[in-house]
Amino acid sequence: MKRLLAGLCCTLLLCVGSARAKELTVHAGESIAAAAQRAASGDTIVVERGHYPVHLVIVKPLTLKGLNRPTLDGEHSGDVIRVQSPDVTIEGFIIRNSGADLTAQNAGIYLEPGSDRAVIRDNVVNYTLFGLWIEKVKDVQVIANNITGMRDLASAQRGNGIQLYNSRDAQIIGNHISFTRDGIYVDVSDHALFRGNRLHHLRYGTHYMNSNNNVWENNESYLNRGGLALMEVRNQIVRNNRAWGNSDHGIMLRTIQDSVIENNIVAGNGRGFFIYDAEYNVLRGNLVIGNRTGIHLWAGSIHNEVEGNDLIDNRAQIKYVASRDEYWGGKQGNYWSNYVGWDRNGDGIGDVPYEANDLVDRLTWKYPAAKLLLNSPAVQTLRLVARQFPLLRATSVVDLHPRMLPFNKHWSDWLEKQRH
Image (cartoon, rainbow, N blue to C red; front, side, top):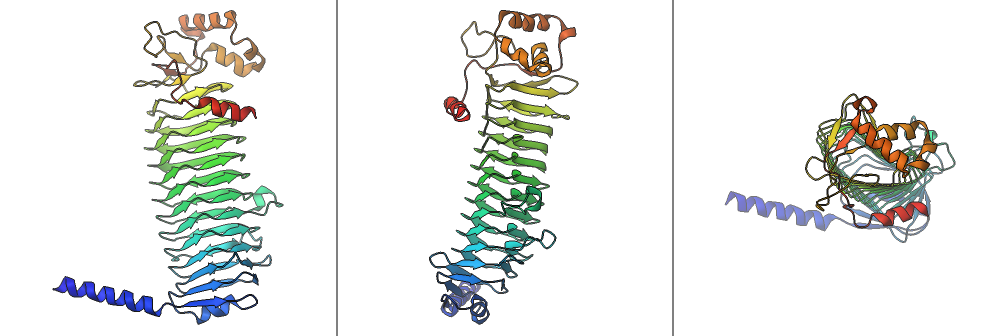
């Protein structure tokens, strides 16, 4: 009986709340701030198409909805919108022209601590220092926004597209971010989902530190200095992302543990993967193709399970810096396009291990012009001789079961992409 009465009371309260919620309309030339002041908690403010100079502060739960994409203009000072309440929704606006004060963290939308359950959806945020500043917020949703920074400023003078700090359970989905400093900057934020974002013409597509138990999937990061940078983290799932054409690295894994990095494509970057101080991770099913260096591995990156990856047509497959061999491919093996071994029994696995750091690799790092001779009989003979004389051998990544054919059936599509 008590449960029944409690359920009836909750239903009654919901009905009363729904009955009280109103919709207010702001016409072109009217004040959005005045409407927000008149509105009761839970009301919806519909803003008609027009140009509205504002520095709007929202202090109660409201839905702010743009009709036919009205423009909210900060006129190059302060924040355009500042949220100081939970349960606020902002959708359907052009939000532009914040101030440019990095110390004040000027933003298109600034979510202050406690602005829990905010929904920022389907907005165009342009020429703002920070697109969104989100601090100490739970359950925020940032969905399908187009964010462009102050592209006329030097990269170091810009803010980030989305700044997520000390927050939990965020959903950052389907956003398009360009010409900010970093696309998505994340620090001390756990249990978040980052899915389907497009990030380009940035310093880092994603700059991410000190955050755990998050999912990165189906994001595309291209034509940046760095694609996805994960640093000082653990328990990440990083899957089905595409990082291409980045001048430094596609995916950086720095001081990362207990994570799964799978089915990503890193193509045409300076370094496909830059792996530093990474332990107890799984790297599988990744396509590493057409990079200057496929994988740069160093600083005690050990105890990782590396299986089922394709390393194809990278100028240097592996750059490995360590004092002992690192063994990969113990179960399934990886595919290496420069493997020169053989498969006498036709089982699809090479009969001799693949060694990434042999004498020939060291010569080509020191004398790049020697790559012109890679397929010559003399160079292949040098590889075989080096294997027989350990004094000539450097420490290396060793794949015990190198595959004879790539795992990814569509690898050539990405090779053609880099050529065009």
